[in-house]
Length: 259
Image (cartoon, rainbow, N blue to C red):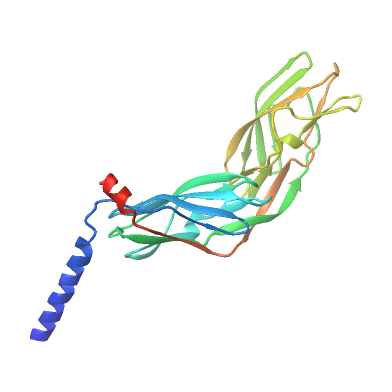
């Protein structure tokens, strides 16, 4: 009985010690990053307290495809085991960069090191092009192109300059892809005019994302023009990539400054 009591006392002492050795209310972590052929994945400004662990995941996409991070398939390691996130999808357009705070909640979460396990990394290797008939001007107030909804936000013609502005919203369950520079203006004479506003860039949308786009054309034609959508719209199908891990440990200097 004495041995049992002694063992219990020692275990209790170890438990108290493990709780007291992190004397800071907030633990700040060092930044760290990993790289693959698809991109660079950096965990920045990480911190842990009793009820949460969080950090900003910054992704630089090296590819011509959209990358997708599904946080609900990502976990932070903690004294309570691996805890998943409930954050929304993170979509990184081709050759672009995005950052998102990923956090997990629980109890007794404070720790001097943690690992972000990115188990939900995907790439859209295949894109299905969405075709749509050319649209005569003046532009329609509302237009549906596949799983994209377009709402007119403004339009004007001043001499040779034609300006059209649409809010574009993606309603599908895949990854919406839109390249506004591919949308051209055609005159009745057969001339084609490029969008002067948007550079060559593909935007990626998760479900219910929306963005405002402005189209500016310089047309010599005095007659009615048409807007040709070409292959500007598409949907990407996410395909699973290998899991990644990012390890971070306490940054004593930042921790002291925070506390």
